[in-house]
Image (cartoon, rainbow, N blue to C red; front, side, top):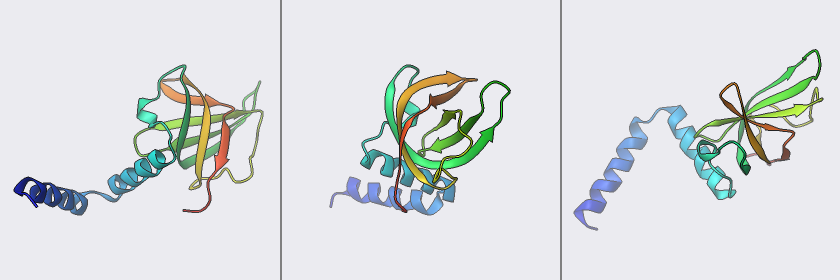
Length: 126
């Protein structure tokens, strides 16, 4: 082991010891997302067709006058993409804390990344 390798491993260990719980969770989510072959949400841009993977943070039914919608915030450790299912009040299994992989075209609404009516796959318990 060279001196540089020793310092590198010491830095990684110190970073893990001083990192907050949220930072550690974000790193784990990013690693899981990469293993699935998903695009990091931070790199997603308007108009791209992407596959994203992460943990659902919130799931909310938004009754609108013209079109009800179910909205869920999917977090992969780098950024959040809001998944919107138009005309839906509830989807079995889509609930906060579940891991999900979604595929669709990125749009931007109110400066937030959105995928409307995504194809999705619920992941098994992790």
